[in-house]
Image (cartoon, rainbow, N blue to C red; front, side, top):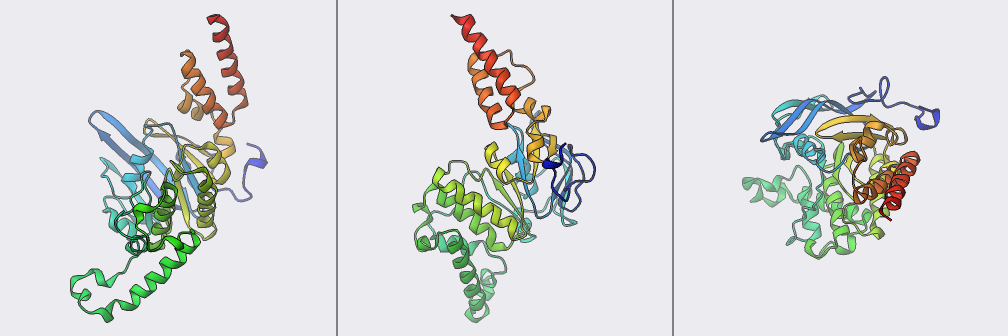
Length: 313
């Protein structure tokens, strides 16, 4: 590993690799397994997420990334395993309590409440709302100030995400990209320590992609830890400080982005170790190789496609 690929302060203890300890981890998971019938969807022996950094969780479709997210955030129950946030166990804790502890997530398919306004969606993301209790709800003075504070926080976030002009509109009227922005802004209402983003760029208009990238970087600048799932390798290489690679439910590689993209385990996870497939598959593999930035593999696949074209004539 060249010096140019290593930050001044290393994030890990020892050589990068699956399950490598981090210097200052915020999230630690051990022995997390989840099976559906006879298929093991997640089998993570050990993983640590570095504090205050942007970590990308990548891997081919079906690798178990979203299922792993669901387990950590309480939306699904594991067969076994433990995990903790800042030393506090969150194993088997329901999703609403996980969020209150400081770990929130967004979804690949946005979960905005369509028939509520943008502002109402934002208010729902805040914690410590006394008016949610039936008895307290009857006495306005008990929760009026807190609601004013929540509204002020929501207005500030909506302005930051350039959704303030939409605050009184129904969430259903927003575009797909604007809903992604709303979901990210709403997640910040609870002032989390760790934000988990599930494919934040999926289905987003290219015009909003740079805006979303900027907001993810802003989270890091504000001291928030980010863990995100993404298939766009250009985005991963642009903003990620650390990359974790999953395949068939297991973590097969970890490291700095520029190094991980050249790891043979990563290439095999995306492309397969053998390339004796038809032309269509080779073409698809070529596109992924380009995304990975592996010039040697691009050249190899290009030659193979050329040879098959020659043989077909």
